[in-house]
Amino acid sequence: MSENTETPTMLARPSWFMPVAIVALLWNLLGVMAFVGQVTMTPEVLGQLSEPEQALYNNTPFWATAAFALAVFAGALGSLALLMKKGICYQLFIVSLLGVLVQMFHAFALSNSFEVYGASGTIMPILVLVIAFALVRLAAKGHNNHWFS
Image (cartoon, rainbow, N blue to C red; front, top):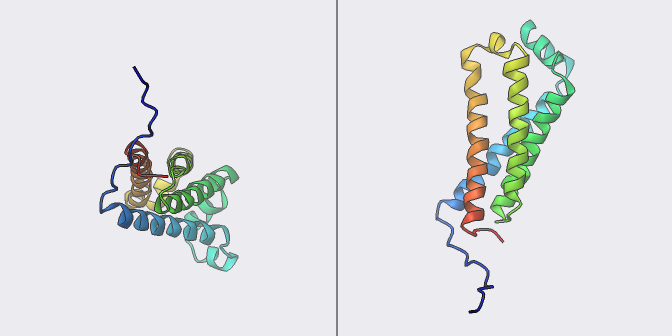
């Protein structure tokens, strides 16, 4: 009996793959822009925020900001790899998701962001978390279906 040493055949990527990859890249580039905007905020711009928002911004620890950076830059690189049909997108999306989880842990468990922004302030963080999970699942599906080189 001979052993099958052939590599699995690549399944055709669905027609929605490329549009989703483009939207993922745009989404993550918006995250990069938000990060850059936050870390380069001038004292004048900071002064235009409410006092509770200023306190929240000024009391954010370095590790939470680093998690934000990890989330958005790994997400952007993962989206670029997804667009290029490279399997490394899965690992990058995992790193991004971990960054999102650490960032959200800080925002909702360790800071008073819910008090500052109210219930409506949870919509975007929940959306970020859902999309981060969805991108990991998409990359896993692509890997399992041999969509990547």
